[in-house]
Image (cartoon, rainbow, N blue to C red; front, side, top):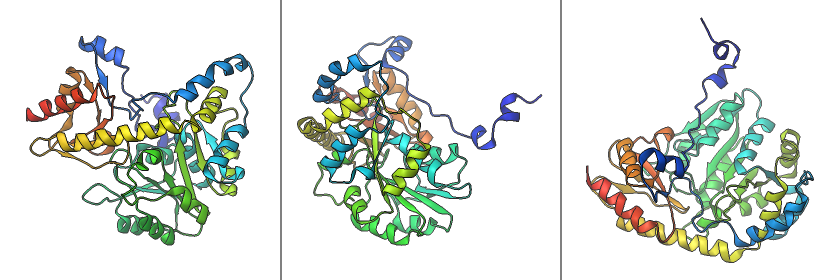
Amino acid sequence: MSSWFDDSTPRHVRTLDVYQPGKPIEELERELGITGAIKVASNENPLGASPKAVAALPAALAQLHLYPDAGGFAVRRALASRLGVELGSLALGNGSNDLLYQLVLATCEPTDEVLSHEYAFLSYRLSAQVAGRPFVAAKTTPDLACDVDALIAGISPHTKLVVLGSPNNPTGSVVTKAQAERILAALPPRALLVIDEAYAEYAAAWSEIDHVDGLELQKRDRRVVVLRTFSKIYGLAGIRIGFAVADPAVVDVLGRVGRTFHVSSLAQVAAIAALDDTEHVAASARHARAWIERMRAEVKAPGVRVFPSLANFVLVDTGRPAGPVYDKLLRRGVIVRPMAMWGLPNAIRVSVGTDREMPKVIATLNEVLADG
């Protein structure tokens, strides 16, 4: 006998992968009988939220009985001034991930394709599949970076969105300026290039490495959409706010499919304050770069590779199935992210933690990886 799920759920929903969130530290500690666990699994800012954002929140609590500004005018004005873009080129979302889903819904006909590459952020595929749109993944280079030739070969008359992370989660790789120009030159006239820059402020600390500046590119080409977030370097992951910079026509269609009041008043207040917290941004970027360099230098074992990264995490190829590695780390109180769901069964992703946490993270990694 078939179930309601089988009979009444659209096929594209039945076949969706279910995102598996990590358990809270407290629950894992209770299950494993350990204390003092270190979570380096979710690419959160170990320095915490922007102090200026935190300081701005108490005064906003008296207005919680009021709906938030649905247009997000104050946030958008602050962003327009900071980024040098027009107010009409900005859209807000409940995180940048929310805006990606809106883009697919607002721009893609049923036969339109969303194109990215292997080992890209899972939401690129899921945003297409949730809407029942085809998703195409091009092959990567041997270093797991975007293979521009393969990506361009994957472009078809049905391609509507080309979505690339720079830096990419989980590999940490970037798209160069010249590569982005090549992709734009190959785009069909009706398509958009979406550059996910969730970690752009971290990448800025690596100024000697060539990587695309999505905002600069968007100002020159109206087919570019840039996604950014306050969740990462600003440390506002728990309050959920991101933004898109795009041609006003794209912003218009995003507004047609977005939910009303989808960005809370507290998120808007925190974002405005965080934009002025340049000291917190700079300190966070320096911190991430320093520990990524140390992990790449110090995490060593036969067959193990730590990939370069311009974000706040590294991808570690453990040289063996990563499930047992993850379990051993977990039982030693270090929580990382296994990458099997990304199609990388031998890899884990390790976020940058605090100065107090990272020596233990590196030592425990080396201990577990040396077990073989």
